[in-house]
View 1 (tube, helix red, strand yellow):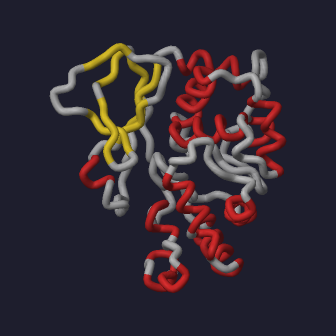
View 2 (tube, rainbow, N blue to C red):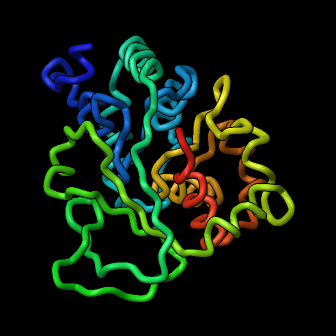
Length: 243
């Protein structure tokens, strides 16, 4: 447990404790992933995919992904499994409040996150997700233990995604693999209640081959015809669900 929460034990091999970025409670932040309650086998496989090159980002400049590849893959198999068992045992909790809106505040990027610009006014919403922390000054400390994300999304997103997720249109039903409540099962991860920014990145990465592990390859045909607008709609809806 101490190794998970302290960088000192890992300093000799220059990798960071998992809790440093994903938080000790496993809830994660928009720029990385929520790990709480995910299957042990799935978590171990993701580190292996990072190590082998089967999982990377479509954006070469995405620092959290490059950090995982450069440093976290140096952990031993036993250290990886110990961390996976710890995070898998945590119970995920509601961490995100999705807001559907016609207008959104002006924002800017600061420290890997989007924050509201002071006196920036509002602008008409586009088909996108803007995920910003409720308290950006404390978000950067990576030590919060209360809900930290308040995404805004297009008002039409929820209606559109019900069609997409039902299998009527471009995509198979998400529930086919991720479970009826989208909370995962066996080695299939939970997607309900996860960061919409993270979800869109993963859909895009799978579609473009940046994620190419066995499970990701099975999803390639599912997401092949999705547009970015489709991905936004799916992520906004799924993120709004109770984890």
